[in-house]
Each structure stands twice: as C-alpha cells, then as structure tokens.
Length: 133
Image (tube, rainbow, N blue to C red; front, side, top):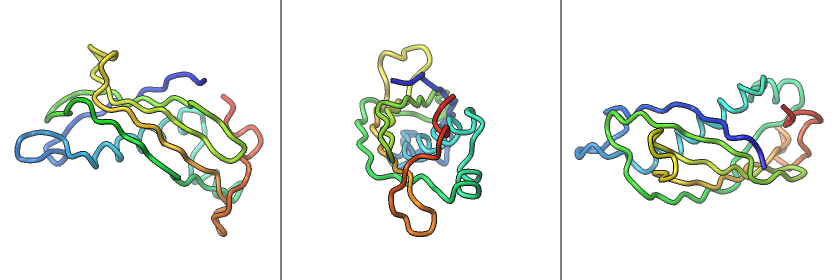
C-alpha cells in the first residue's frame, strides 16, 4: 500500500546475550524507533499530534516472526510500510534486514496501531491530512 521507509540499526553489546545474539525484545525497540522516524520523515511527530490534535498512537497488537538472529555489530535496516489504513487504525509491515540480502529478513512484524484521544484513550479518526505525504 505505502512506500517502504528504512532506518539504519546497529546491534550493540547491550542488545545481545553472552553469545552475541540480539535479545528478542530488542526488535520491539528497533521497530518502534523506525515507526517514529517514519513519522518524523513525514514532517510530523508524536508530540505535535498530541499538542495540536489531542490524539496519540497506541499499539494494539504485534505479531513478530523471527527468522534469523541479529548479532553483535550487525549493521541492519528496519523497514516500515503501511499495509492497511483504517478510520482510526494503521497496520504496519515491518522488517529487519541485512542490506546485502533484503530478500531474507531476519524478522517480520505486523504492528497494528490506533489513533486515540490523548485523555480518554478512546479511538478517534486520524486528524485530517495527518497520514498524507
């Protein structure tokens, strides 16, 4: 549906276990950062959305398929693609890739987020024009 946005990720010592393999939970951080940078690349931010529209993003669900390990010192790319857009939700497809072999992702995630009222956390429509390029 949407264009592919990429964000570079480096695997640091703090991201790994004693064998040099990245902890599974770190993928959530990398995917979150990539979504935040995707938003920033569109000229928007979480803070601006809250301040101007009284709305925030919240994660509804995440499904991650781990296919290969990320390892200490790897230079990777996290991708963000809008796979589905609803009235108050988005589904992102995200991948963690080695740039030299993007056809073999290390992990693939489906992340559903909702636009909610900042005070009540009830779903609300995306602000007009917010998701357009």
